[in-house]
Amino acid sequence: MSQIIDLTREESAALAAISTRGTRVARGADIILQGEVDECAFLIHDGWALRHRQLADGRRQVLHFLVPGDWAGLTALMFPESDHAVTAVTDAVVATLSLRDLSALFQSHPRLGLAIYWTAAQEEAMIAEHLVNVGRRTAYERLGNLFLELLFRLQVVGHADHRAFDFPVNQAVLADALGLSQVHVNRTLQRLRKDGFVAVSDRRVVILNQAGLEQALDFESAYLHMAGPPAWLRRRISKRPAVGD
Amino acid sequence: MSQIIDLTREESAALAAISTRGTRVARGADIILQGEVDECAFLIHDGWALRHRQLADGRRQVLHFLVPGDWAGLTALMFPESDHAVTAVTDAVVATLSLRDLSALFQSHPRLGLAIYWTAAQEEAMIAEHLVNVGRRTAYERLGNLFLELLFRLQVVGHADHRAFDFPVNQAVLADALGLSQVHVNRTLQRLRKDGFVAVSDRRVVILNQAGLEQALDFESAYLHMAGPPAWLRRRISKRPAVGD
DNA sequence: CGCCACCTTGAAAACATTCAATCAAAGTGG
DNA sequence: CCACTTTGATTGAATGTTTTCAAGGTGGCG
Image (cartoon, rainbow over all chains, first blue to last red; front, side, top):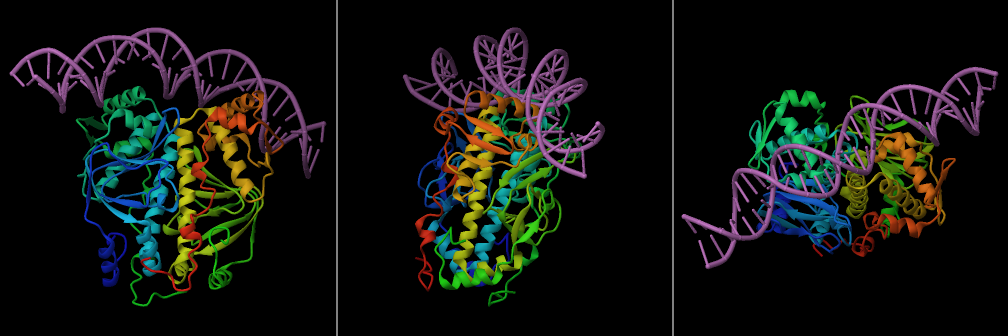
């Protein structure tokens, strides 16, 4: 949380009071089930997870890839039951935040509430971009955009170096994320390789020519809002919150 | 706002203090521009608007249809510049909420902050469902699902009767919303008509066989979260907020 | 009337899926 | 350590969906 806003001592204490020791989650386990009542949100400390929605006939859409530092279920907390599932892709370590804690946080520490709101807003922006990707970009562009997005996001949390990151996701999941068939993902991946943009193998992605790829895709990273919250949210640390300021 | 939670007298007063008279917006005008700094969010009192994102080469994805009672830019408020545009589809009347008011609201009236957070969460759920639609459903299903979603949403705000609503959107916009070409939207619409499910003409949609359509589509409305916020959020009206409760 | 916005249609081409195999690598249990 | 199973990647061929391009058609409106 201290990445998002500058915490006062009291805010730090409040967070410490509700933070839980990390819980281990096994690879493949569901963190949140679709259609189930769930009273907790989860902060991914380590590992990857997916938000995905399953249709009655088995078709599936992956909504979002969750990497270390991301929240799962922060918005699902608002509803009696979750409309999508969250599943661990690798063994993971997560911390939980209960609804009661969230609610209490909004009441006792409004700035932390705003910081959580900011996090949810960022999440929405990424899903909206995902929708643009699937709705209006070619298979080739979808894959390239996803790889660049993940490179940026993982760099921020120190899980990618300047060009590569571990990618524990198979082609079937990629297909469900990008609105394509598994076979077509495979063939498109081959084109990206042939064009010298990426190397994908052994659960690892290497971006071989980032500048070229960004140009080929017209990549824009604005939606990632990577600069973090604007100053007005980060720095409002006066002891008495300036109501109406 | 009183639709979302049960307001205390003081909360009502706080809202009244920041509420603005409705502003008129002409059909086709941009309410929020992509890439621009914007300090206000907007509540649509009357009329329709679109959230959409434009790519450099002109391709466009409509992210969400906004109808009376919806907010525009509630999350964009968190970022220095908006990553998408909001445009009025019809003449519209909107009320504004400035960033400073939002921020103040979180500080002085945490429950109202939570209610806004709930609204943003619902918006995210609808965009996520839109992603499922575009990523994993056929053209026929996409169109049918959209019509049913709009029927439900418009009924809640009294802009649809039991089977029909005004629909001020042309086929090109529909195409940009559903990730299809305009021509294909046209042909798919004809199939929906031929199957006796809908009548679409003169900017008006009539659902002729709702039960049959829902069955043909495997329609689920859970993502709409139409029951409103759960009781814990609606009813917490004690004078002293029960922190840590 | 004539223009404009929007809807409709046809034909060809491009894109993507399905089905069905094959292959390699990574577990599993004795 | 070796058969056996499982998982994931890859390929080819046939099929189907969706787009593109191009050409009308329709109705409202100045």
